[in-house]
Length: 253
Image (cartoon, rainbow, N blue to C red; front, top):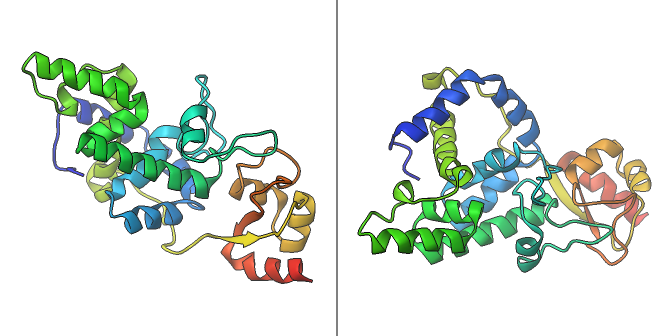
């Protein structure tokens, strides 16, 4: 994306980040298990890598985040949009919180929005407030002979701030020292691996077999609502990559 642009809205977000430098330590810690996977998914699709920063704006990289409007997960999917993109939601499981499935769904959605608008800034605005609202704002500006770029549209205040926040984040992460921010190191390698369980598995049993603390298992599998994996699937668990082979061997035994 164009990180060289600047205006008062981007500058206001930059100033907020400069005043809240400790926020980046919190975000680094939360994002560490997930960021490598998200970046790799974005790279594979050849989309702007700034999209990997969307969970910072959406949920502060909290996979358990839940909004008063009913949005859930890293990407804050609403129930209907989640269902449309194949994120099942039931008593056992909420795919909107499943990091692997929700990331793929979010990037599918973003690519669909880009195809609709032909502009990543408009696609981001549509992800936040819905494509219909952005289309109406574009049509209104066309009728008035005004610019149809994101910056000229009449959109809800949350959406008006959404794109500037992401661009400001991109600026900080591209050149943290320029903005007086220190970013914690996140290893550029996989944090987790997916292990097939072949059926329903109690989480306490999974913890014992894998050697992974129960709290860490739930952090890596935030889509699980209950004490076990769903009886009807998905029949897999995500575990730290260092424990994956041991877990597979124990399951087989």
